[in-house]
Amino acid sequence: HMYGAGRYYLADAFNEMLPPVGGGHDGSRNVSTATRDRRLAAYGKAMYTSIADAVPGATWVIQSWTFGADSRFWQPEAVAAFLRDVPDDRMLVLDIGNDRYADVWKQTRAFAGKRWIYGYIYNYGGSNPVYGDLGYYRDDIAALTARKDTGH
Image (tube, rainbow, N blue to C red; front, top):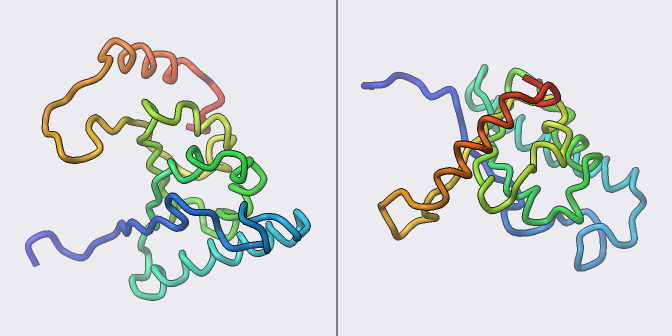
């Protein structure tokens, strides 16, 4: 009651695992690219629809390191297929693992036009202090904001 109804709902699909779109260990074997993309689109649509049906007007939030951790599978076309049936204004990608998986936004063509936020994970749990290469963070953000191909 204090903050009102939620508008943003985090639902990470396939975090640290590949989607079961094919018969092989890599998730894509034995199926055509068209079949893979159709199945990925169905997963994305189902994720979004489950949130939108429960809370009309809600935004689905997803963390991007799924795409960076399994970049051999999550090629730009696969990411675009997964996100294509989600309205642009109802999706928010948290590209927050840039100190571990750099340039995921670039590798995915700015998440196929979806809104996204850039950042870092300082400690991955179990540790409270902020640490890391602070100069890298500064320089990385400066370089990103100077680019014209971010989709923003």
